[in-house]
Length: 376
Image (spheres, rainbow, N blue to C red):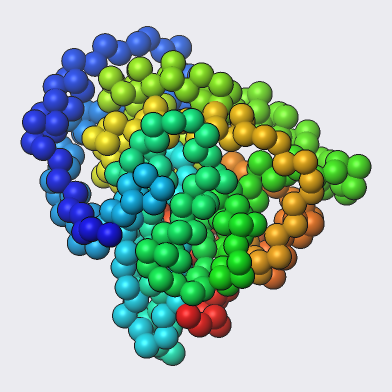
């Protein structure tokens, strides 16, 4: 386990600015807003800011305020933030991101969890970059999906950091990996705190046992796939074809990712009601400088091509759900209770798919309410 400082070469920053300046913009149907995909006017505005006003060195300083490390687990170097709690009673918690975000998803959450409450309770926070994302290694072989990643993260927590027990928070792929960790676990995982039910588990169930809400979700999911699921089809089948454009064009990368931040957030009609330009561009810059847009997309392919789970999964680990109203994944509570040992299911007042960035105070409070009774 070695300490890491994030340092991007100035030449890479200048190359980014040069590419942005030379962007060849497409046309757009007049007054189509975001209906056909990422809005042209907004993307031009964002990329102009990225090339002229955004300061990566400034964001780098913010990132380096936290303690970054790398460690090798099964020939893969994992990047992670490891921030010890400042309380007298600390609980280790693993925070797992998804796509199209990165470890940066949780930056606002760190001080909210590491600072102690009135009872001295705080969290030791561990935030890994999924292999193929951010500053973790890009896998050189296929088959690195949620199940394999779960094994790596279990080793990180138990072997490298030495925790006898810990909790996990996750959303998007983070929820899938957390569930796999619980299935592989040896009772060292004290609790799960999830912002969605992993969709890959939904289809392990026996549909003949479904209630009305669960059957209705099948129709909702089919409609969503036809209107919002193009990225899923591409990344799940031919991610390498997509990678050439995303790795070469920062405007192309921004167009692909920003559309999801717009569609999946509780932004009341404008993306910057949920995120600042600097937040959007720091996440994009992590993808750009690490050249992981293509490798991150492959997690969809690996999941779709792994052997099917031929049983109805039941996860015994105590699980707490915080469901945000504008999230894109709204699997019914009935299914959550069917699969998980669900201790609470809370419908949050506001927020979307990226609550740690959008509504960090709400998320931190719910994590504390759910988990502060546990002890390391």
